[in-house]
Amino acid sequence: MSAGPLPYAPAVTGAVLLVVLLIGVAAGRAKGRWTLLAAGLVVLAAAGVVLTAVADPPAGEGGAVQDGAAELTALFTITLPLVIAYVAGWLLVRGGWLRRVLVIAVGALLLVAFPYAAAGQATADAFLHGR
Picture 1: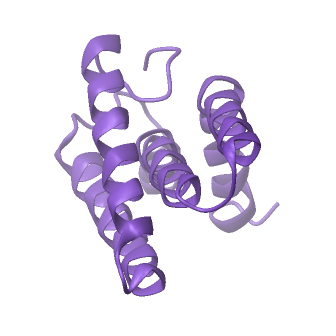
Picture 2 (picture 1 turned 180 degrees about the vertical axis):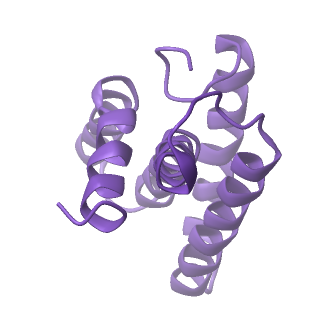
């Protein structure tokens, strides 16, 4: 996988994250914002599962546990950036300009610096390997 948050071209990744951020802003402005937050997170989790299932399976040996670990790592790599962008957009609509700048800064930092693959591998080790 690539070094970026999503395993696609940077332009496509940026466009998708911007659209998800704007959907999060719309959900945060809506009347039932808490319901839309929960529904959006469920939809993004489902989209991550579908995108992970559709992606080519990783080449390697080791049986089902290793394949499960690779799939969980891919799921984290695809889903977490989308969730971060959605929640950041949802949080943007409340508060003043300082809070908005902080939300964008923290969201951008998480999108760039969060170790998605390492978090997915650690989760796979904890749940699949029992370590």
